[in-house]
Each structure stands twice: as structure tokens, then as C-alpha cells.
Length: 464
Image (cartoon, rainbow, N blue to C red; front, side, top):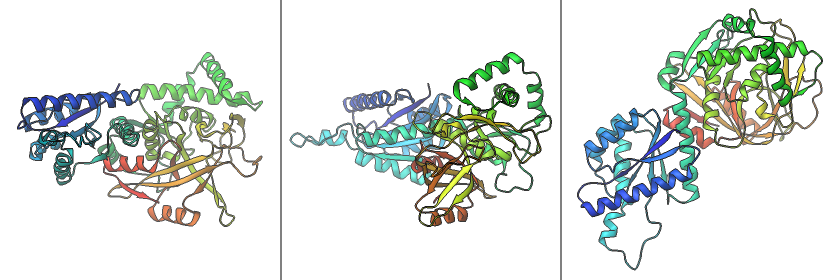
């Protein structure tokens, strides 16, 4: 399991007895957090930071440990911050500065200078905070007693974001085909994506998928069809079309495993050798948290994979969606989000139906797809765009709602939401910010999660 290192700060002027107590208390706090974060990350205590060399060695260790996704730092006593400069300059992992105390209450009747010298986080954490700010260290600061649920909730959120950043670094993304012709917002600087986020994004010809699909056996198709029948309602007599999607999914799974990719794109303008646009196949794969972006939108595909990792320990749905059309009664405006085919079943309010209908674009055979109505609940929509000299995240609040009336002639999955705080300001703000028509929608994550991710990755963020 991945881990967070926990480091307690002090100095060697206090004497052996005090330093032993500092180490004991630091281990106790780390053990408590380790228990509370069980199933998410482990928390491991490092040696007390007492001098420049020791601090440097500990933070260097954190950076070199592949299982370490971040560092929690707490000043138990005063710890002169110049000692931390060399170590902080080497730190490559996300940092949480925990501003807390070992004791919850002051011992009013017994407090003396020994207690004051030992328990002076109010002093030491301000000194440490200054040097972090001067050095420009990207970090999360959490203040409060470490056993309080509000504090633990923020530490868990940090752990989720740190895990996502660790997952992001070195993530492989495959573009089956290229960006959709003449479309601007889905394009981007793939080299800068790797420099900034660690996303290794590469082009693959759709022939790579066709070659795998041509080798899929009848037994593999039959096994995938059984999976479909267990998960979804078969609502078509065109079994051959469904089997074609099963063949694509088997091939895509092999491709994903062979190329070690966590996200991928395709485009209906480059389907040479495929009889259908992958629909049901992509929907089923997205349900596992594999990132996807249509029309060559690698940024959305990668962002979906990262945010799914961030949300892995939480309840709720996270996946790609596309802005499509509106219902505009004044004061109760709603958006209908969907796509040609690729809407993840994590948003399904009922058991999805497998249906086959003509696509109306791309000139291919009618593809099988999942059709369903969407869930309800508060959520966020997050878009990543390339501004030329920087990436920008645009984040808006939404409220997912049940569709007000049946849509019997719409042969795709659909999700509806209310744009917050209201339709005009929400949509106008999104458009002013350059937000795309593709977004990652999540009912598991919050604006604060995206804010923290943006801060720790030094990404510009616009919150609508």
C-alpha cells in the first residue's frame, strides 16, 4: 500500500528528555492517523527533524521512495526554519503542514515552562510556515486538533489527492487516431502535459486495435457477452451488433494491458477497419475507472483517470460527460449532458439497457450502446484546457437531477443537471474561462479537492 511519511520538527537544544518525548508524541500521532487512514494509505513516522542534515536525509528519503505519495510535517516544538531549507528544496512529493498539538487542552492548574517549551506548535509552525512560503513550497495547511473529525476529513482528502498525483506521474495515455479535425479545445501540448503532470501521451493508429480485434476468439466474445448479460438488460434482437462491441472490448482490454495505459481516446473520423464506433465497449471500460476522451481529447481522458483515482475511496460517480443541449424555462434551466454513445454507466439511475440504433454520423454500422437515465445529487464539472502558455482547470458546481419527462426517442444515455449558482452566471463564467464542452463530472469529489490538486500541481484554476 502507498504511504505518507510523518515528520515531527524540533531542535537539539531541548535536551534528551524533551526530545524523547517529542519522538514519542510524533509516533503516537502518526499511529493514530495510520489507523484512521486505514485502507487509503499507511502513515509512517520518520526520525525527528533536529538539524539540517537529518531533515535533508529524511526528505530525500521521501522523494526516493516510490511507495511514498506525500509528507505530513508538524512542528512539536520550535524548529529554526533555516534548518529546513536544504531539505525542502529537495522535496518532490506533496506536503501537508499539520498545525496541531499533541494535547487537546491546556493543563491550566499545572502548566509551567517545561510544558510551554515542549508544546509550542503555535510558535514552531509559524516559523516553518514562513520558510515554506518564502521558498514557494506548494502545500496544504490543516489547522486543528488532529483527532477532530474535521481535521481528519481534510487529511483524508489530502491523501486522496496525493494518491492521484502519484498515479498521474508516469501515467500512459493512448490516442487511437488524432485530435478531431479543426477542433480547438480538445487539442493540447502533449509534451507540456508530460512535463507538468507526468502524462506520457502517444498516438496509435486505429489499425493497432483492429489487429487485436481480428484475433479475438469466439470464446472470448461469449465470455464478454455473459458479462454484459449479468450487468445490463439486453433490449435488442441484434445480437451480432452487441457481439461486435464485445469483440472491441476484448481487444481494447488487451491493448490497455499491453501498452500499460490508464486512459485512451478515439475519434469517429478514424475508424478504418472497424464496423462500428466503439460504444458499449467504451462505456463498460469507463465503469472501471479507465479514462476516456472522445474526438481525441487526451486531456479529458487523462483527467478522468486521475480524478477516478482521487475518488477511489469515496462514494459517488466520476467519469467523462459532454455538454449537449438545454431545457430553458426561466428560473428552472436544465442541461442535458450525453454523447454519441460514450456515457459511463456509473451515472445510471437504473439498470442500463443494451440497445442498437443508427449513429447518424461517421458512416458506420449501427452500434450497440447502453441507454439509461442519470442519477441525482450534488456534483462538480471539471474541464482542462490548454491556454498556450499554461494549462487551466475550470471547475463548476452542478446539481444532477432526474429527467423531468421521458425521452423515448433519444437512443443514448443521458444525465441532466442544474448549473449552479444559476444558469446565466454559471454558463457565462464557464464560457469566459474557456471551459470545454467536455468535462469530468463527479458526485464523489468537491471543489476543494480540485483546488488542492491545482495548488499542488501548480495549475491555474478558475472556479465558476
